View 1: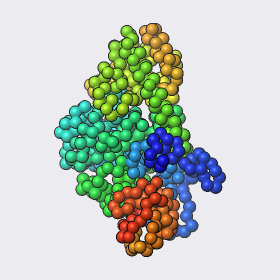
View 2 (view 1 turned 30 degrees about the horizontal axis):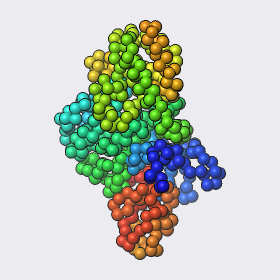
View 3 (view 1 turned 180 degrees about the horizontal axis):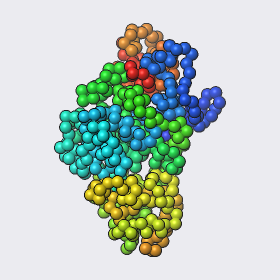
View 4 (view 1 turned 90 degrees about the vertical axis):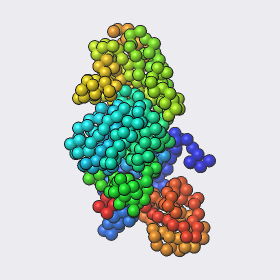
Length: 415
Length: 70
């Protein structure tokens, strides 16, 4: 059996790092070095010029980060990857690689609040305009396309709306017009490979499920190898295509935007996340199963108004989620309580779940989106993003499932 | 046999595989090079099992550099 025949979960464990031939060490070393030395000035020049391979400076590349990038490339069946300081850094670096002042992007309107703010505020100040569209309507993406459109951005699952766009239908629009489709797969690693449905670039906030333990921040940009970078829509990347062919996007990203803006990843965080990657498969299985259990319990409880979870048949995107995700629906769910006061009370009554704005941890986490990561938006925008005042978002953890349910049961009883 | 390596004519023994060509061409840090064979990216795991043929075009691609020349 060749390595290519192995399941991704197995390759994430076996394919990460071969034992060091000199020391026998079996764990990825942390190369905690700012820069890397060469025998001669000419050798260093060759690496800088791209005529030879090698590591230069950890802001640009590093052996520990290289190994991590190789593993994440495998996770998404891509051709290469660049690790970044955070998920937001990965998104910013990607968009600034594709678009500049005077350009335009199209985004799902139900994306994570932090990304929404980046597009709506910061990119607008740089004169990159964003049109936000309903992600359930592929025709809306097509209607928004202009001559200066440089990217279509979606998430595999909205946050906190937890809606599930039809990736293939949106990819068909992107391909028809020769526009890059960027898919944020933070919420569903291993559950879906967006490349299978036509994604060109896949992004993760690796701080979440890939890490799995809430102890480090990071992000990754993966090129699926599906886009023709000789396209005239991206003349700056086309220049790189003449030299590095399929790797033109990654080349431009790493050697220009990433190098110039400096949001590099930490080797120590790559080490932590490499450990996390090895248990990603079993963690996703357990957390998805527990999420179904908790969602079903909450939906049947008289004190809740409704539950938002794509794994429930009551969810409007249940059918497309089943097609794309193959029976697992992620470990993030939301519950509505009728009023903001009841939502806050549910959170405060919990004895074990932690109150914080994160997800993908081993611990169960709860957040009130309307007063945290969606607080800066108008009520109208918050409703469109799926963050009404009475909604609580739950990131289901790895605790014993009965204990998670019991914590919510006692909290609801106390309302 | 004759190969085109990064556009240059290169002589290599019959049956040379891609991994051996990396050694023959004294490629430093071969784990960092990406290889394109006749216009297609070659999976790293296939370097050793891919025997080259007369007139194959092989490109060694590096995209890790930091200079303006990319």
